[in-house]
Image (tube, rainbow, N blue to C red; front, side):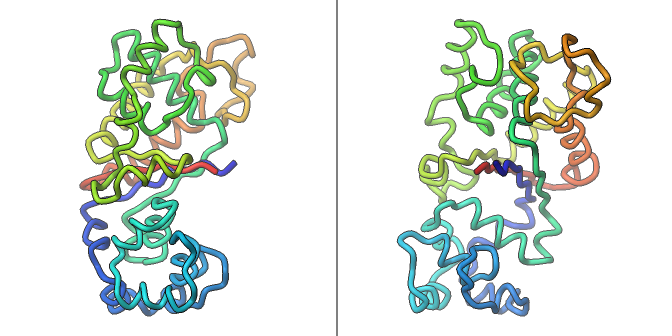
Length: 264
């Protein structure tokens, strides 16, 4: 399973989405990616991306019509998955990709963030806004990954309903960006900052993660450093270190950071 987080700075990227494709090509059209033909593989070129993303699948003539008449926003709205299309556009424009960063993780690394958020929240050390940010980004059947009492499961379900989860980064994306995708989660600017406040707090406290059901398919920083029966702490896990490094080295400098997560 491919599981990754994609962070970008909205202060540098937002104006991109309102461009027509003709405007985009005038600004960024010199690259091989922008000029390339449709190879049948979505990431190979702009035309391949549109042919892969738009539903129903357009013909070559229809792809050219989209590039001739429509905007990037229109294309994203008609794409599935939307966040994949957004990521590919940002990634393939060098001057824009400098304002983004991607983090690939092990299949169950996200469990560390869920366990830390739940542990802190139910101990009264993590505010509800930070807990909800983690829940929204990792919308799932939480009891399959972390230990929750019956009462706590009810609390989690009450905090994070479908309506809350379905809010995309941009209102113009619509609920389909998430509800029709199944394999994505996202946070806006305020919640992304809350996510990193939680990570920073858990790192500095080196919070013990007593709620984790398993460490299978989770990257450990020092696998032999503790006995298997010993409760592991936040700093023991690769994703914790990776998030702290991302924040201190790159994302702290973003004016308006946001994030989406995809897994497939």
